[in-house]
Length: 402
Image (cartoon, rainbow, N blue to C red; front, side, top):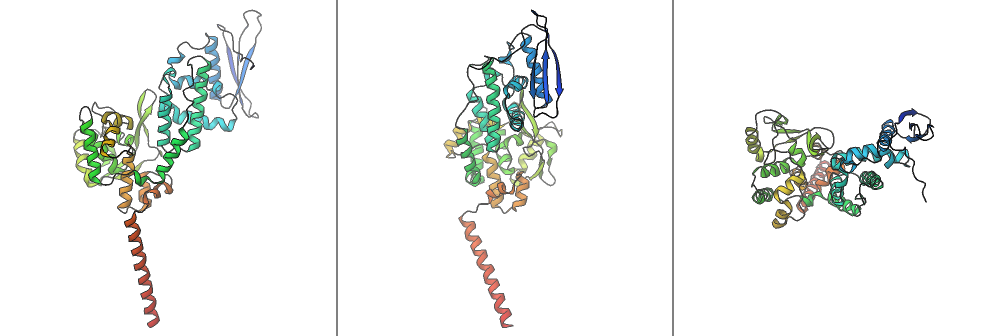
């Protein structure tokens, strides 16, 4: 039977300190002391932590225990606050080499995605959607694994605190979902719409199916596909980011889920990039600029009530899944508008290095997936090679004759 974990008694005043012991694997030792109300002695508890922040979080957790055990309102605390306060307990026993990637997963993915949700409202469905978002954001398999692992540990602590009655982060099947996403990324061309007619047909159908028939959804879909941008990046577009002389858009930010709701932050690669604004959507851009308040900070695209847009907002407002199924595009997701734009650019002959910059890809290998030739391209390549060889042969004959 496991030994019960020691805690300070309730309703005692704690003193605390943090000692730095640089020669130890976990160099920060947090300690709390109190005066025993019965014996008058000064017992203490300590915890070795990887960082000073974790040591302070452990002390804060002990103070809450002494103030009355588990916070009775802990269930309604945002997941971020509960996790930060209890992280030392959640990560107890981990090696230092594991702690760092777990904390990175917590800070970079869990907190921005679902950190604003109260602990008791984190369900299996919430976690499923979060994991799907991390996979769609092209996180590596190990990154997704570490992120789920730290979430499991935090929710396990909530289970021990009797805030919840089951751990919703213990999900299965995400590996299969990841494998499917990898297969799609190997051939993103297969996810693209065929042509401009298919794109406008989709955009018009989405507007017609939306409850308010908001024409702005058409503009969002056309702009996203023609600039090969993510929906969050379209939402983050400001008037000042547009150059209507050279007809370019400097992508600087994206709208995403964050603590307390939707927030704007830097692009996925943390770098601004310039993309062309093609002739087919220039009138659209000019019209929307004219409809803003005239300031550079005005958003080019908003929802029908002026709010920010993310992929889930577009999906729900337009009944996306129903519309694409009816049109025969069962595979199509919002992110596939980006695949569409990059595929069209590749087919138009945009050089791969230019395409990489437009896409914001960190790896050229990712960009090259859009260059998979269709049958006509293969035939053309063969014709070009034959012409080259004929020219080489003719040149050799001329040199021999001469």
